[in-house]
Amino acid sequence: SLTLAYSYYADVFHGYAEDANEWVRQGLEAGERAVELDETDYFSHFVLGRVLALSGQGDRAISELERALALNPSYARGYLGLGTAQSWYGRAADAIPNLNMAMRLSPNDPVLWGMLMNRASCFNNLEDYEDAEHDARRAINMRPRHFGGQTLLAVALVGQDRMDEAQEAVAELRRVSPDFTLSKYRHIRPYVHSEYRQRSIDALRKAGLPDE
Image 1 (cartoon, rainbow, N blue to C red):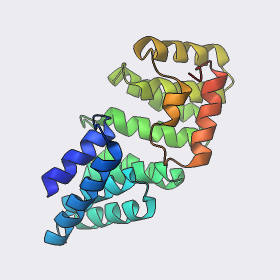
Image 2 (image 1 turned 180 degrees about the horizontal axis):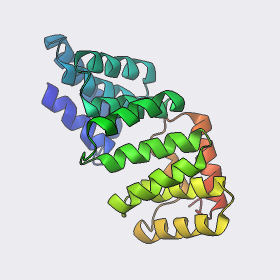
Image 3 (image 1 turned 30 degrees about the vertical axis):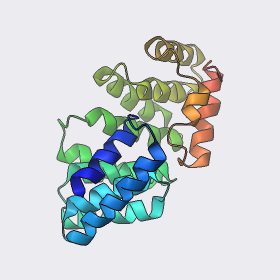
Image 4 (image 1 turned 90 degrees about the horizontal axis):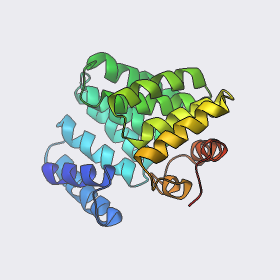
């Protein structure tokens, strides 16, 4: 059950699922079973929390991820998962210390770029655009072809009224992801806090990202 739940989560999170809603549903069933089989297993709570976050159940997701960390306080990916869920569901200020802890526990983590992107997103949402720019640029250096870094950088630059550079970031985004538009951005993580999402959409539009 646990392996199955994680597989469903990973495929949906990375955009590989043919039917994301169905895979999330099956991932939730498998995750719930895994937790029922062993309430003391931190990884079961972690996986269930991640799937819950993808399902739009923010409060439950955060609760499960907090439970995972109570069982294993040294699990770096647990802090990443918790910080990610908090950032998606309107708690950017709460997310940053957890993302900091993830990086402190695993400074050479293979997904350090993801930790940085999540923290950059939090900084943007808190209007701390200089720190957001710093994290976005570090993430881009690690994963230059991932759309996330350039979108975060563009938002941070618009926030600093550096429009020429923001437009350059969007141009680079369109170079590596030619089909990326505001319409596509809206469909990524549709459950993300509406104020956070709209702020990014407005900034990306100002920087020249087309609607279609």
